[in-house]
Length: 346
Image (cartoon, rainbow, N blue to C red; front, side):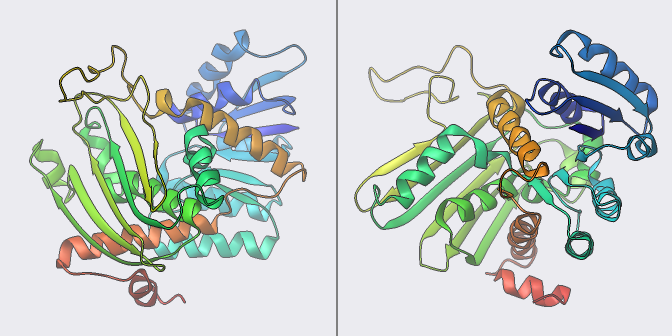
């Protein structure tokens, strides 16, 4: 297959390296809004490609679509996702896109309608679905090992805040980070979020407050089967990058993300000290998961497997995130269906 990569920034560079060594990919064609960046990335990948595979720059995004690729991977700026999804759909190309589909609900809906009308494939990038720990927890939960699930506790903590110019384009802490927890909860349990109550604080750098964002947030989710979920996130976790999820059932309790690099220190006498090499960031923590989801996309694009994360999953998680934002601002419980109704979708 010939895969087109749209975006040569940080996540695009990581995806390029993964795709260049993914079975089934014969050629990788890279395009970016800054053509020099795509050329530089292609040059850097010369040392990792396997024999018989080619990596070449197409210069611009237009060049990728003109190159006759079989599928595209969208790793560009967030505000370009919907337009590129639409363009891929109209070209009849399967597409993988990093979350979100679009920064807002209606932009997301319009892009998904384009995919549906074209009859093409859109796989959205929720990489936790491909993490070994999350997959093992799902299997245990679905297999009855935990018994009746009554509580989930989710943690997503960045080791350090992003640069100030990232915030206006990120959608904020809840939409940017906690949306992964919202997707993981649905994927693990198969349940819908019935109601949320969220709050946030911004006690760190002033640029969070200037952007109308928070640097720390907490949400209580009630699932449609009564399971309670607490989700917390912060941009300030000096101990390291931390993503964990505890699943508590009547029979057993499992924890995703608890290992020798988890950035926690036991306060108990004789308990384990903090790790010597804690997780530094999301690419470090989820590198294997990112590679696995791209390998899956190649198989999806070839028609060899079902789509493991359709674009509609992005809308489901976004509605929960938007409900949390509304709850945070209005300081009241909010149902995701209220957010959908306000947007005019059912």
